[in-house]
Length: 246
Length: 246
Image (cartoon, rainbow over all chains, first blue to last red; front, side, top):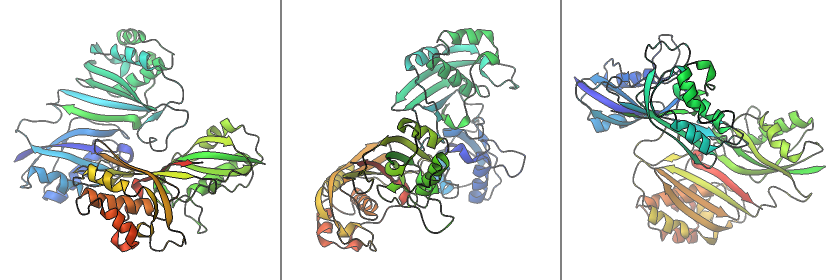
C-alpha cells in the first residue's frame, strides 16, 4: 500500500469544519475528499488530517495522508481529484511519503493567519475571508503585544473553556502583524494550537490595537491562566490554516 | 430635491447584473439599492448607474446618483444603507452633487480590471473573482499587445455581435498587465466600453500570452473589424468595474 501525502486548500464557508461528522447531512472537507478518493480509486479510503479546522475556517495548506493501492502517479493525483471535487476544495500537491508519515503526529509546526479588514465600510470581497474592524488600530502596539506570546507558555487563558486537553503548554515561534492597505494580517507559527487559541489571541491583540489594553497585559494574562480575562473569540471566517511544517 | 452621488462596491456572483430587470424574481444590484433606499427614506427612488454590468461581474467603484428629499447627512448615508443592504453590496461613499450630475452622461472615463489566476491548480479563494489559466503566459508579449489598443479605434472586432450601438469607436487611455504571484491583472481605462469589450480584449491578450497570436495581430484585428477573428469572451467572474472618472 502507498502512503500519499496531500496539501489541500479550501474555502471553509460551506463546510461544517474539516473533520467528518457522524451526524448525517453535514458537509465536511474530509467527507468530500474521501468521497472523491473513492470515486477515483474505487477504494474506501480514510484520510488523516493534520488537525481539525472549525466550521467556516479556511485552509491554504492543510495536510492529509491516506493509504491506497491506486497506481495513479503522484503528480496526476491533484488533477484527477480536482476534476471531481467541488470548486471550493483544491488539492495543491500530492506525493508518496514513507510508511511512517502521519499528517497529525508527524507535524512539527503550524502556521495560521487571521485577516482583519480595517476600514469604515466592509469590502464585499472580504466578507467571507476577514473580520471587519471599523475603528483605528495601532499596529505598533499590536506587534509589541504579539511578541509577548513568543516562547513556551501555558495558554489556558487563550483557549475555549471546554477544551478537553490536559496539557495547555504550547510554543509560539513567530507572531507577526502586517498591514497592506485596509488589511491587517496576523500570522502565528506554533508547535500546536489549542481550541480557538488563534481566534482568542488575535481577539486580544485587537483590544490592544484599539487601546483597551496595553501590550504588557499579554504576559499578565498568560500568567493568570483565566479564560474570562482574555479577549473575545473572533469569528471563524478570518482564520486560515496557512501551512503545516514537518 | 438633493442629488446624491454614491460609490458602490458589489460582489456580482449572486446578481443578474447591475440593472433592474422587468422580469420578476431576478435579483439585481440596482433593485437591492432602490429597495434599501426606500426602506431608509420612505421615498420611491430610482437610481441612475454609470452603466450596466453583466450577470456575475463585480464592481469596486460603480457610481450611481439619485434624487431624494431625505435629510440624512451625506456622510451618514453609507452607514445607514450598509446596515440594510445584503453584505455583498457596500456603499463606500456618498456626497451631494450639483443638480446636473448624471452618473451615466457625466462619466468621462471608466477603468475595468480583469483578473486571471495563472497556476496549475485553481485557488478555491479566487474561483469567484478570477479566471483560471493553467498554462504559462508570456507577460511581456501580453503587455506589448495591450499597448496596441491604446488610442482611438473602431472596436467592432471586440464587442458582442448583437451590440445595438451605431458607434463602435472608443478611446483607450491605458492598458496595463501586472503580475503578482499567480495573479495576472489586466487594467484598462477607456472613454467607454462596448458590450463584452473588456472580456474579448482580455481573451485575445491571453491568446497572445499563450503564443497563439503575436502582439502585432491586435492592430490587424482592429482594422479588420470582424468579431469572429478576435479571441474568446472570457467569463464574467474575473471582471470588475474599478472606477468611474468624472
